[in-house]
Image 1 (cartoon, rainbow, N blue to C red):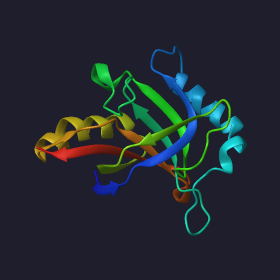
Image 2: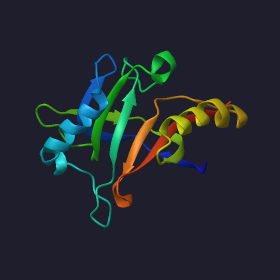
Image 3: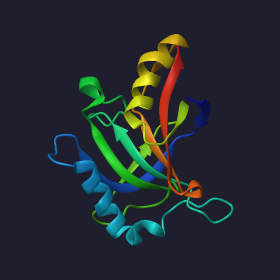
Image 4: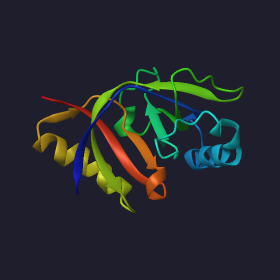
Length: 158
């Protein structure tokens, strides 16, 4: 597992949110809803110098909206599917805007091993490297890499 350290300033997303109290495949359904209506927020998308979208996120927060880790063994909290936007962007009706705090992140590329990567970082890598999770884990989907998924673990040294 190749872990990189990235420092990211606070950033903004416009998207749709739901919470883990939903039933069924609520995250999948949320992604489908955003995909279906993405044209409504595309104009707000923050762009890279080459014109590509800066990022698509599966953002998470605890229920207090303090961006703390999900509770109940990382299974309960808020989830937003969103596009990275500039600070002055205003969410259109029916959409939500979040400000994700700045953190130092451990980042890991995920292929078909999401749960393995998540568990390994939390239970092995962090204790072995004397760091702890200090915020909700974020999912970054890189537009430049055909939506390759990376997990972002906000951390601090013990």
